[in-house]
Image (cartoon, rainbow, N blue to C red; front, side, top):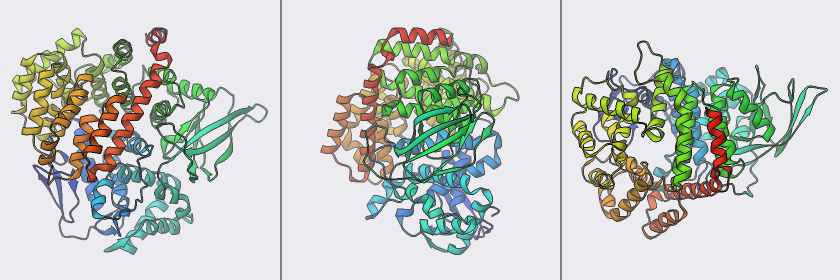
Length: 635
């Protein structure tokens, strides 16, 4: 009501949780429906992640009461007007309600990163995507409509400022309420409110596929004037590193940050520009794309990268900028624009990092790399040993127990560190001993067991116990599954149950998931097997192929999003070329028209991971000397 200055028009708004519901939630006007896990929680048991999830889903659906219900898109090619804006609004409102959660900082990892990842694929699509048939609609309910849409809104908010942004939205709502609208209607409303040509600024961002990478082609420090002179070029970024002949020129608002200063916006509307940045010395750092407000990647010169990495290590740059540096660097390695060893040096420089959001970015990269190098046992052991040293100081800082009056940031950091421990430190005798003790006590004392094992680390402890435990602990997990009281607690078990090291128990999980777990959740145990290591990858994919007709029968009348989830959870961790071709050939012989876009994206990602493995093999990471040097740096 306050933001739009249009009161909610109906006499009531009910919210109802449905035990089995394919979508996360649905914004029916006056009666919003949710999965149980997206609405119901026990505030004393729920993890911080669960609380954030419920808050965001509710605020997302309530935003739809205006964006979607009061004003509705004219046709499905403007789906993003509903979903992109609601995705932005969920963060805006959650940040107002719970500022301690730092939701806008988390936006960079949770929302902007999925948009950048998907939109760097050749199989991506524009935000405004032509929809010719009704059957195509479900396929654009993806990270482009939601996450890229929200990222574009955030970008425009940073350009216009709060006052003009809000005024434009209010004008848009008043003009089009109880009617339909198109993207251009929103651009025009913001143009009238701000005096800027928003349609011109934003057209390429919504009408064209992809986004740009800014590459610093040259740098020259002018000592007399104290300025760093850069030549910057924009091109579409593709994660496979291939060149593109596309001629798209984006209007890019460039905001850079130096020590103690953030610049005004400089608009880049040409292929190349020159930028002169005041700096006191050549060794000072410059961070382009300050606060990661723009949907771009940045490739620096080696000297600039060295300077900004040092600044990150000395805690001179903001959280969002650290996260952007980590995410961009991993993408640049995949594309062949950065050496893998330089990425690892950057990652290991964060050994004393205290921010949970930065650690979430590190976790994403570390687990992705771990998955890629599984086939080389010697290299994998070196990597695992180094990561265990990296996380050591943070583990010592957060410990096992939640302290009285502990702040949100520490609880969140513990959750992330334990996810990494479950991947890289699960063989540590002390960690395993404590995990088993806590697990046995938790099962015995449930439902009054949250003091023994807080919900923020419970799934990670399950994983540790199952990785090194026996059938006894495996059976205890099923016993616990019959006791737990909420769907969120069930999902915590589903996501860990496939971590068992025994192949016969992994097979048992897959069969049980397909036959016994409810439709909306049965892909979670499959994911737990697929993500458990090389054997799990092979088992999950082979199981999907062998039981394809059963999957089809189970999902016959379900949303295609559930089939997409099953495909992803069965083969998304594959990173070998022979398996990549096997996946491609299988879906050529067994086409799924309603999932063809998702399948193309999955296959493209698998092939990119195959190429990443090749890059790693041909880098210093394949040499023992590199890991000896890294070990000394960490210690």
